[in-house]
Length: 83
Image (cartoon, rainbow, N blue to C red):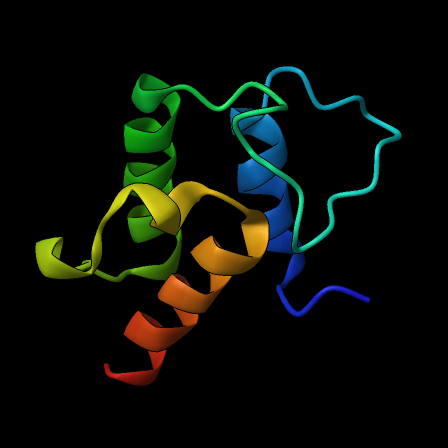
């Protein structure tokens, strides 16, 4: 079972264009390998911020933030917990 909620999973699936509908979304999946581009990462971040009513501080963003669903969920959880 993954640590995130269904909303997060839905947002990820919409952004990962090469992820098959029946492919499991695991915490260690390489998001680049399933179609996450830099443009899609920016769009995903904006959608996550809107969906969770959060603002991710720029200093927390880096290349590895979007490397796997697990690293991105850790970032989102950190921001949610600090609110």
